[in-house]
Image (cartoon, rainbow, N blue to C red):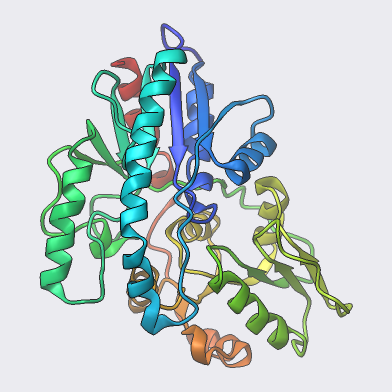
Length: 364
């Protein structure tokens, strides 16, 4: 299906884990379905990921933000704050990169997923974020102050796309639905790299450990869970979520180990899992909702966004949440037997981005 002139669109996801990349997949799929060209900008890891999903796609190198997290919850925010000058410089650099790139390889439109320097004065530019309200963990006054600074960046773009539904119930809670939102905000529905084909796997099902996110917390959680799955009675599929992960020594027969899997290799493992243990990253949550899965969430310690989402979704009875520092797999698996696991969001919520995207492209 082609809609008039072929448009060239730049997609640039943030490099904090692969979640920002995976939620761009349905956008790219629909852009290509409409007969237009999607161009990806990202670091080496993102480039390799997109080339596996979309062979032959045009990719441009763009350095990432390379944020490091603290090993300890108490020092998470100070460690992040110390990186702000470098992150501000990175935003300036990506703005300069964009202007150089557009002189040589112009595009018709730009979709930035949480990359704040990728807007252009003469090219329609949108920014996608589920976090209008940044949770600092330092009280409402600080949250409102940070939000005012955040909105200055968002207002440089022609539109803000929030991957959620506008009404209640929703997935992002106060993150995507603060009391005051930018006037050019559009809720585009949920985004997932997966579609639910309503097929069931062959028994027996397995416990899926699905890791993700930046270091060192990814490795810390991996080591914690690896020790605990040794005594698990059923089958376990353990996915490290990093192509740098070194294979475990002496892998027991009941555990299947992977470092990093493609979207298509991962989907049947998620579909056939009896339960999934993972972070409470927003993109992962959208994938779980899309496939209707039961999950135990372990927020990254000190990452206030994930901690809020974990608590928010536990209170709604959508996902069970446990803290990393006292996590017991045995206890969590016992507790989920009485957890409601409600499913308030439906399949149609994952199609709402299509008319928004088509209308935006038609106006370029």
